[in-house]
Image (cartoon, rainbow, N blue to C red):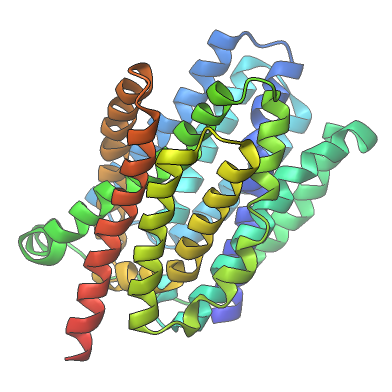
Length: 358
């Protein structure tokens, strides 16, 4: 079953990677205004938010099958129609499918740390491949690429039928008990993890664009993507590190962000190289962190959905905080905050690892 889970999540990531750019590009090509695009993208967020609430309140049987079915409908809709309503429908389906995909962790209950390494490496590699795949639209056309995903997502749907798992018979009281126990610490971890993700995915690219105006946004975007490729190898070997190595890499990443806070403006090559090294230190630790957090979530769909829901709130708070820092030109502080938001949750994971072995 582990192989089926890894294949399912990898194919899903391939399509999500493709749609992360293609969906916006398709809307622009189809003549939607920036305001309309913004509304469509908002519908993804709203549908995800509602889906998390539903998953917390109710038990949905065979939810993975629902997620894969909805994902299959998206390219079919976009091949047949490119109206505003079609994009809104595709966005809603995307939001629901993504929320189920991120919440249902019971299928990973038998995973070892090596399984997490393999899965995360494949997901990252295929997500990048999906992102780069849109460039082929200039050769074969967008419709052909969307049509190619239909048999692939159909195969993924059939693959979900092979996933034999039993959802726990959970109640909201279980979530309450979890919050009274380890839940508060896990949510604190989640806040800093959200802060780090938002910083690296949105605000560090924004700082690079503002600092190195001699480079076009397309060039900086390409460089950032290319510097993501080596991380696949480090995710793959992440299961091999010891607890001591985990802590050493945590300190190394903090140090790299502190160096970035001082020298980020010197050259784009230096900035990108330091960001790459920091991401390497993070990627090697990622399978250990993923395994630990999933266990702390008790492999529970309700608890995982609540965790994802709070991530939305944390991301919004983090984004406002970072926006204020960028407005005040506190670029150095953004890099320092990135280091701190990586160090503190990793410290929590290290404490859990050491306590488990005692």
